[in-house]
Length: 435
Ligand SMILES: Nc1nc2c(c(=O)[nH]1)N[C@H]1C(S)=C(S)[C@@H](COP(=O)(O)O)O[C@H]1N2
Ligand SMILES: [Mo]
Image 1: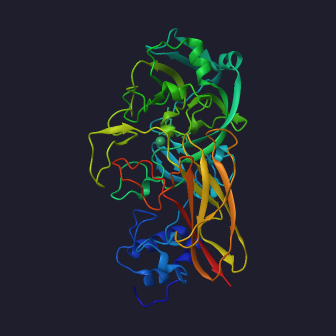
Image 2: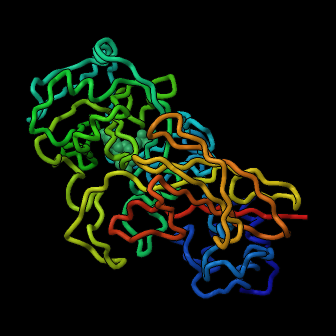
């Protein structure tokens, strides 16, 4: 560090996040992870980086980067909310920073996008055909969207969709793939029909074990093949919440989110929820479509040392317990003696969240937040609370959810796996308390 007086990075961060990020690189903090660890510098150096005193410095895990210097930066793209973060434009992969996911029901312009290939063009909604077949389907049938609407009971249900790779950016050693931070999660209100009603209309043979989708998008390497074709065991497909949707939040599904039709099997990796849906197959074996095999959406059956591969992988099913702080935005400046209101969401795959806790002292003590019931099964739950700060300075607010089985979110990265899936570490935000 030179002697020149630096503007506190915290202040710079709130003004110009991109410049602040660059400063970070200059200051030798691992630039790969937004929540990595300081290489050498101690807490004193850290305090000078953020330009403030850290009241609970004693409790801070050694080397952890204060989130004030490790937050999201965002820029603009057409079509979705301007705060969208673009991770990749070919194929399109975008997410939102946590504070933009504050809505109880995720609006269409804030639904993340995870495309594996090239979406279809020239979509003709009136003549869009969904075929249902497969070796364990008694009668192969074709439906127009209008047929689905006429034949089956319509349901509207709020469902969480989370990419299995959400949080991948924190994996160390790093894992290839989109470097999702926290925002590959949405919970919108979907309208359509129950998948089981359609499957039963075609007849499910006794030997059926799996239900899988095909979509109209194509792989990037112009071989004409699908980009992805995944599925779920029959039991999951037959749940009341597994649906074929043509609408979301009272309107059409946005183009990049699968217009005009998609399947949703919420609580599982969102890769099981096929977009631009044109075919469903009832299988007599575990589906063998694109991204079902190898290490795709699989984790080692037995824990591996970070950086090691495994031959023995199993398919990810229900997603783990997780939560977000959606208010305030990380970097908020609060007056001493003002009670700070906090809120966010929590979810736990197929399960419910049972408890929500907050810490303002780097996890030394926790206090319970108010946790609401989900509006329906497989919708996220909202939590809220208020906190008081005793001294001025830099604080972090950590949030931790516990699922119905008593499983809590880990504080740091969970078990490493080769593809960087299932990071459900606690979300942390920075706040500055001023007199
Ligand atoms: N047809 C098709 N379906 C798909 C995908 C895709 O690329 N093509 N991506 C999957 C993955 S990996 C995820 S995380 C979710 C993302 O849904 P969203 O883009 O609507 O948020 O869609 C899934 N369904
Ligand atoms: Mo995904």
